Image (tube, rainbow, N blue to C red):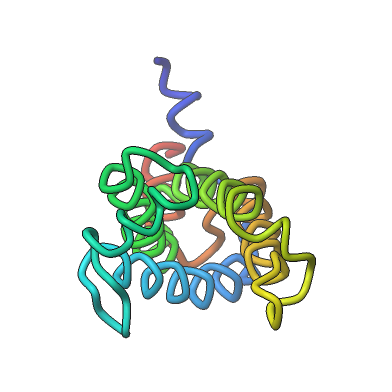
Length: 149
């Protein structure tokens, strides 16, 4: 890998809009991941989430729970900090696609029917962050400034 490729991972526009998007989305993802991994906030932890994932055809359930929970928890933390924003957002977007098609799509759009509207909103936000990067106030911005000087 050359330095320009690495620099491109960290560069973004210098907008504050990324911060406004990153922090709340990161908080939501971190909390959902903590439910899956640690049974915090009323979640079921890896065992319970894994058993449920098996019932919807995502097997092996424990591994799928570990992957989804880790993507959400650690990806969410990365988004809050703006550290490796693009990769974290991309993994989170993929996780939301899986959630939409494996859990929510058959229930229609609305959350009141366990539909996909919330996962779709998170997909849109994480896709936008994948494209625009961490923004002005991010760890990525600090790294980018060091790499481009």
